Each structure stands twice: as structure tokens, then as C-alpha cells.
Length: 338
Image 1: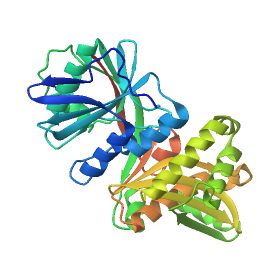
Image 2: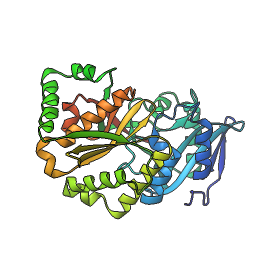
Image 3: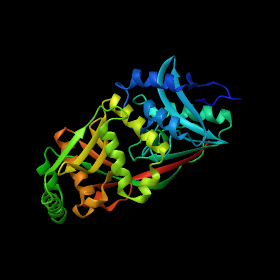
């Protein structure tokens, strides 16, 4: 895995801030060093996540992971891919729903200024960054920087949906409007008429574990376009990423069984009090019983019982997200001339 450095300086200085190009191994060491004291709110920029994405899916350009230090103390990082005179976040938008700048608390403006100065010295002329949440560290840094660069252009990119979770399942149902609440209860009752319904949430899995196989089989059985998406390369990525999430203690695979037969599955991870719905699938023979939506509802119930504070559906305009209480959150693309 080459890290971009050819014909370019390996470090730069801005007001005692030093910028270095680092390897994935050093990136991972810095994650271990700082993850308990820095926010690290965006898991999609964690070293284990990006290394798995890059190893299986590559990047839109040469990887360039930058670390920023002040007097040998790390204050931030930014994982980028560089192509020609443009730098973007490292990692594919297809599998990295959000991305962000990584910074020590209160140091985001200094980190971004330092990265901009370093990239400009390399001849990079533009940062093209997606996908940013409204609460992204990057947007906060942009509002504060004074470095000589062009005006950032923010544009609507995609949307996500999320639910602030109450203390109980009944409180969740009470927060829905009357029509939504009726539909949720109707779907749950209707599935129960099919037979014995069981939902279980499993974690800490090896790549070849049965729940992983079950999820992948249901994903492919869902729709022809999803089966085409799950190529051999993509399957290898998903298996490795699930294994990495399991090692980190974050993986949550929810499996809905009807009469002991797998009917639907959701691939989630829990991180800093949020359950993220990364992907899902179901057996189309159960489609009349809305097992796809029911599996999400049972995942929401499980996340409440597990003490999560939010449920994040991640990117996408799927209508079911609104129907079961999801609130729309805009996502942005940032073009920043240097």
C-alpha cells in the first residue's frame, strides 16, 4: 500500500505545526493513542475502516494520510486520496457514508490550516470533500480558518435519516404519529400470524461465521440489483469489515427468523451511543409480510434495550425511514480551492 510521497516534501511547517505523511500502521497507532481523548465521532475515518476499504476497493487516487503535530504532540489527521491537482477523502462514498477531518478538541482550525498549506505547497489546487454531516468537524474548521484560500462552496449532496431514541419501546411508539404507530403495530401483528417469530442480535464474529453467511445470502436474495452489487470483491470487503467491527466490539447483526427460517437480516454497528444501520437484506418470499421493515423495527427496539441514544439509518432516501420515524438530515459536499 503506497502512500503518496513522490516528488513531494514529506513535511511542512505552519506556525510551529508540522505536517507529515504517515502509513496506515502509524495512523492506527495514533488512533489507539487518541481515541479516548479526541472526539473521533465519525467511524468511517477510523484507520481499521479505511485500511479495509482501500485494501479491497482501492481509492480514487493515491492515498495520502496526513498527521499534524505541534511540538511533537499530535493535534489532528486527515486521510486523503490525491489525483492530479485534487484531494478528496480516502475511501469510497459507496461504503463510507460520512467522512470528516480528525482533530483534537478545539484544534480543528489549526489542523485544517496546516493541511491546506501542506497541500498547496505540493501543487494541490482543490479539496473535494464528501459526504459531510451538518455537525462535521470539517465544517466547524471551515468557519474558523484564516489561511489564504478560496471561498468554500457547499452543496447539497445526499440525505440521511436518524431517530433520537427514548428510554423505552413504548416511548418510541408514542413518538410516532397515529398513522405511523398503527402501521408499525399492524406489520408486527401480521408477521406473527405467519408462525413463530424470533429476532436475535449477534456480534464478535469470524469472517466465516454463520450469521455473516446468513446476512450475505439474504442480501443477494433481496433484489437482482443487490445481488449484482455483492460481487466477489465486495463480498470479501464486507466479510473483512464485519470481522474488523467484531474485533472492535462494534458489530451487531440482527437476524429475523420466521418458523426458524432466516427471513431478514440487518448489518449494524454500535459506536458512541449510536446504532448505525449499514445494510440489510431479506428473502423475497417473505416480502408480503414486510420482513424488511420489521427487521429494522426490531433492530430499533434492540438498540433502545441496549441503551443507544440514536438510531442512524445512514445515507439514502428510502421511504420506510420516514414511515418509522426517521428525521431527515442533509449531507454536504465541500469544494475548497487552495
